[in-house]
Amino acid sequence: WYPCNLVKCRQNQLQVQWEDATISILSKDEVRRFGNRKKLLEDSQVSAAKRRRSATADTSSMPRSLTLPRRQLPPHRYVLAPMVGGSELPFRMMTRRYGTQLCYTPMIYSGPFSRDKAYRDAAENGFQTCQEDRPLVVHFCGNDPEVLLTAAKHVEHQVDAVDLNLGCPQRVAHAEHFGAYLLEEKDRPLLCSIVKRLSDGLSVPVFC
Image 1: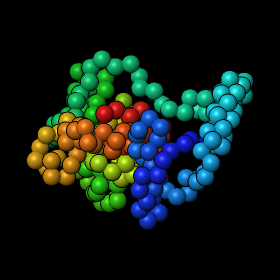
Image 2: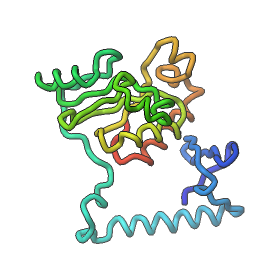
Image 3: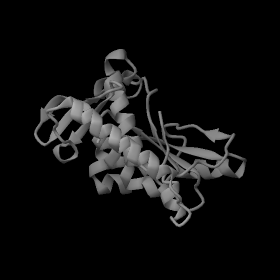
Image 4: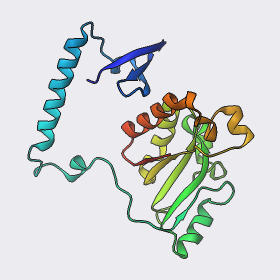
């Protein structure tokens, strides 16, 4: 258990702030209430000590997947950046023939991708791949930690990393509040909560 402060309660979700000032949205089942902060800190210290002892214990009999839970990207120097209308599967495969070592998908809208199977299956909406299309980074836009995580979970085992769009300057990005418009100081807690949620919930690296 990690100490945090309650910021807002919405139905079955709680918005909490961690000691490093980042914000996360958690379900009520993930949060335990402590009335005594001193006891909370003592329990946290005991838990941390147990984790340290566990980390230093002999893991020779454990499967390798348990000792290295997050998959690592292979070495890469030549990268195909995400381009709308440019970095779809056929173009990625062509560039790989000429030395590209890491490719990004085009920008994908996390909202409809997270909830609509027909949208996910349509190649024109950004995600189409094949066995030879690796290593691959899926490039999402959005501003909701849970929606982004759900979207990423659909393709987690088909990609090598997940990238959050923080550069799109288009009018639609301003209207829907994503891309470059998440970089203002007022959105720092939201942005940190997105990165933390993705990092905690995925087995692949997270870029932004």
